[in-house]
Image (cartoon, rainbow, N blue to C red):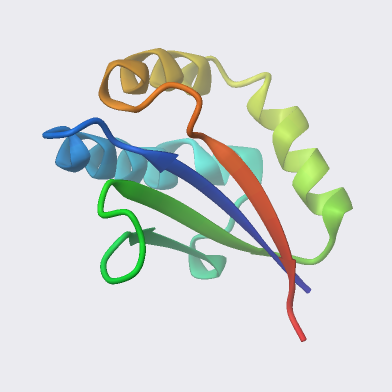
Length: 103
């Protein structure tokens, strides 16, 4: 079992826009790609983390599952449109994936 964590930082004053966009993505796009609602959560920075950081965590079986999701995402037009709509609200270059093993 692994945790795939996607993280991005909101521009100052735009955090709620990013949170709202992520909620829409988790509801409308993530399931189309294969992310399961009961194995996903949305987080934001609080203490000891950047307050502007917004993260999604996805519990996955292995890297193969994540690769299948990424491949599927590339074929979903709504994901491409969502990305373009999100871009003005985030700090360029801050998106990243981190993968953790569950012990």
